Image (cartoon, rainbow, N blue to C red; front, side):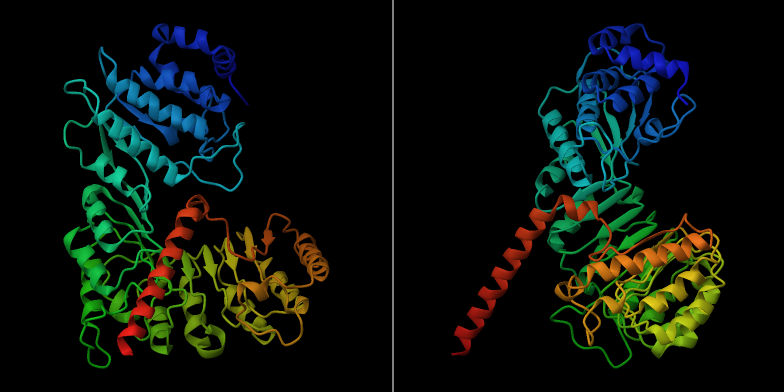
Length: 510
């Protein structure tokens, strides 16, 4: 319920000119309230004016938009373009205007990017767009006469691609006074060369970086990864995501003796120096027989581990089942491995070890069939903390899914299930794993009937609170959605370069 203070503030902000004229006479403790009201009502000019004369030393966006005694609604999932642009412009006004300045820290982190934007305008400003706007504003301010002795430390989650790289570098490496001192707790990189990545990470303040995501179209090999860890250093890093094939040997590297990988051992040693590291994602890297080398030296138990499509073997699974990380895992992704058929003993031992902590388990494209459902129900039964179970891409019938759903109902904290289209809905003989074309060609009417049956299984067990869905092409990814055009252009250019190289090689061989 809204407080009387909030209702009064709504009435004032609904008259933007009056609200702006009244700011000078407002008590300082009303500014946070006015900010949230103006953000809620999308009164951009009021938002900008409030930030322009912010009277306190700190401005923390997520804290101000979160639930409060005056207004219980959480607005942190409103990445509203109108409001966020007003925030950045208001901060710029603050450093450029005359008079006294108290604001020293502006924390712009904590905004959640969601699929359905709930703000009235419906226009979203995603992480890449927020990075671009902040960098552009920094560059504009650097060209202005700066107020002597006054600057604001700005904390921001940055998303850098080739499209905004130059502006970000200029913002982080000003030639003169910088009214905005940008610091980066979380950094995502895509469509950058290794050299660009190394340069920009050296500028973002790696000493305070907590989360680093290097994804998709950043072409790294093990030599690049080692160089990055050695030269930049990330003493506070808690979460690291590396792109596909990040542990492949460099092209000019001399092959190591069988069973040895000195580059990977050096990378693992650098990771072991990160005493805060608890999240590691290395999906789509070839790590057959190398998991002990990679994870063994780590000093801090991992809570999040993504080893999807890493071609693990029996020795890798045995190590995972018995290592110190197993009893601390909260999020685990082993997609792309035939776990139940090839490594049932190690896999189910791993589940038992992680049962008291595991919250999210992903087993997509793991060749789980109807004959494995009994083992799966027994293996999952101890996982009392499990909240999400994702097993898309497995060839399971409607009957097997009903059995599995009945067992999942027994998990007290389960909230979300992502299940495959039942194989009954595909033509007989459909091969698994499926490509994107095949996966979309199923009997929709039959699928709807089976989905309703599965929903009834949940309802009869009193678990209508569980959300069950089949996101055929993966969950919504706001970052990819936002930069799809740029990534598409990047892929086309890469394809063109590959064709040119192939053509050149053919001519040389003639």
